[in-house]
Amino acid sequence: MKKFITTLKNIWSIEELRNKILTTLLLLAIYRLGTHIVLPGLDPTKIDASAMAGGGILGLIDAFAGGAFSQASILALGIMPYISASIFMQLMTILYPPFQKLQKEGESGRKKINQYTRYLTVAVAILQASAYVQYLNSPGYREAIIPSYSSVFWLSTTIVLTAGTLFVMWLGERITDKGLGNGASIIIMVGILARLPQSFWQEWQAKIPTGGGGLLIFVIEIAILVAINMGLILLIQGVRKIPVQYAKQIVGNRQFGGARQFLPMKVNSSGVMPIIFAQAIMFLPTLLSNFDSTQGLARVFGDHSNYWYMLIYGLMVVGFTFLYTALIFNPKQIADDLKRNNGFIPGVKPGQPTADYIGSVMDKITLPGAILLAVVGILPGFAQRLGVQPGFSSFYGGTSLLIMVAVILDTLQQIETQLLMRQYDGLMKSGRIQGRQSVSPVSI
Image 1 (tube, rainbow, N blue to C red):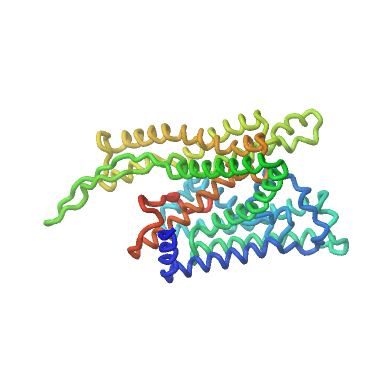
Image 2 (tube, helix red, strand yellow):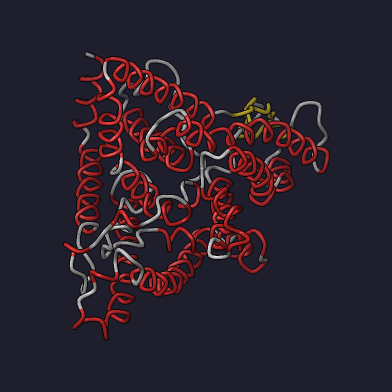
């Protein structure tokens, strides 16, 4: 405890770090305030947020938006249009040669890609806002539309939602520049954590009335949740180190190179993207629920605790993990970079043999990483089958828990870096906190 208090004092004594933390908290408070402002033209007393289905892609968007989606807030779309645009632009930098060239131009190329991402965010926000207006005409929200405002409701809502998305994007960029951590990721994490107190209270109310046994079950659930978080930290930080040797160079009387270093290969290099892709695909069959012949299929794919759902979902996560890793990981480029810097892997020839070796190592560690990621994805379904409330079960795995743990690790890593730069002790007695290698919004 004394060590913890000393660490907090050290953090607060660094003016730059203190200002970053305060700026981040202020901007997040503004964001959370905006999520409680209802769209113009709606009567907030008539909104039935419980009418929204908790699962599927809509439930995922509502989780990322911190409940703003179901509450018909001016920030209902949240940061998701920007995330969608960022994912698309990242794939384009891999598949489209002109964008590949832009990415290699350094800072100037990165600025151009960011500008294109902002333009695409506007287009995606307008499309999603138009679809959201149609969603507001469904039961639970239709009754809240003020009749005298219905003629301009579509236009005003589209404009307000698009402006709200751009405002959230601006908040995220300000957090990244002036605050602590990656802004877009932190905004999503705050939205996820905003549901935790309510879900925790619902689980408590569900267990306590059952008597003394209910309290014991609740304590066991919390212990399992802590254990899952610890295992997830190992999955996120797990690396396979490949030894790399750099050739010696003698310039005058000084020697350069010759050091033995390691090339870290992430066990979970694809992050949370395979789970997001799998959830989006699994949601599609639920659109067929209006047809009598497909209601059984839609029922299976709409129930996260169904064994068939969990099996298919797990297999899709494994498949998307390999696919996404193949897209973002380029062993040929790594081998070329090593060769250019006079580096080599002991016992492996430079060039193509090095690329083949790195690719084979990546394939070997991707399989266990993909299986563990699939297990994390289906854990909420198992928790639900064991009696955990649906809201609280989402914190036992899946997208929410992965994003939350990864963003917290990244933020703690930045705090620790600031402490070590000023010759303070780190946050841990032994070792360093490792965050993700990438800080782009799509690395969530």
